[in-house]
Image (cartoon, rainbow over all chains, first blue to last red; front, side):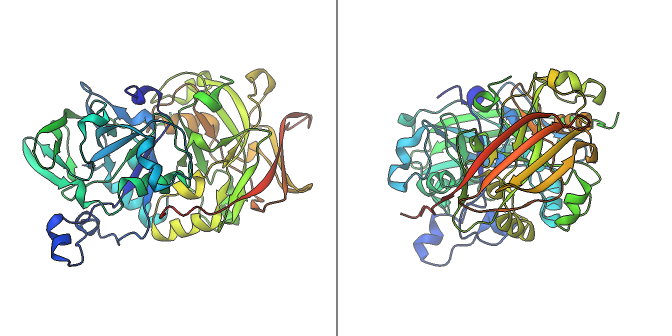
Length: 239
Length: 225
């Protein structure tokens, strides 16, 4: 399903899905919720998700747009591309619905998101501006040995800001597919963004954002992308 | 764009666009349009049924939908009408208890608005059938009893403003649908009931479009199995 950017009908993004690294689970101590914690959000008991419009997809050689008046944060994520229609998908069948993967960013206007949360308003605008879902190339399943053992790294102007492992996910991919499909039917070309590790932060016009997905053991790069950041002027819809 | 149900890429729903509806839910009238997304997987057409998921209180919200005919962003109000390919009568079904919970916690509205069958729609209405979109009557009946009966003249933000504002955030594309808000009178539906909606000319009262959907239950699904 390499054409999901053009034909896909929805992007489902999971929120607050990263705990701390492998060391925490080895020690048996209660995991620190690094990303959830850095945003002062309590641990979810079930997956939290929201929609990003497919109009927000961005591919190279495009640029990420920061709308005037917004503080935009990067959130690097592993995306799962859905291969066939299903609803109420049991976890045991979840993998059969995956046609591939993609490296993605869930760009977020953080100031607007905080405002929306305070007022109990939708997150739609904060998450849905044009270019707010930069993606790399479609990754066929043969390139992913174990989706629970992948490294996500994000650099801004060459400096590493996010560097986490998919092993830190609170809710695993089969649970995410099952849970989302129990609300909304999944269809071929849909993409599920599976959450982001700690280290989110702002990007501003003029900066360069680079993301990498690598095998957790061999450290071999599976996918990468590079996007410049530009400004988007305000538009007066009252004209 | 009669195939928007199958080919459309998004449904953008405007909230609190009728003053009395905002009031009946205890909400302030917004200073700019508030909107959210419903997934296209939520479309249902006749002869389908509206599903009420176990554990939810589901409300009907009858709305006029605008179908977009071409791609655009930062669309000035003066050009907005040229982006309309037609209209559709629709329901923005809402799991009200889940929405109230989400609002309290500052969580997304996505689940409350996004269950399968939560966007029932009638047939595509070509522009020739709508003389003035500011003069249409929206009427909703549950089991034959009128619950919603309002005019699009009550909209706080008009269609050109909605198209312009939404397009200043997210590019609009052919087949997208904008649900333009609901009048007062929202309320629950339960399995076994019949929901009927009508769109009529505000002056002649002649029906332009109508639909009828039965309501059924949707059992809970345990995603932890």
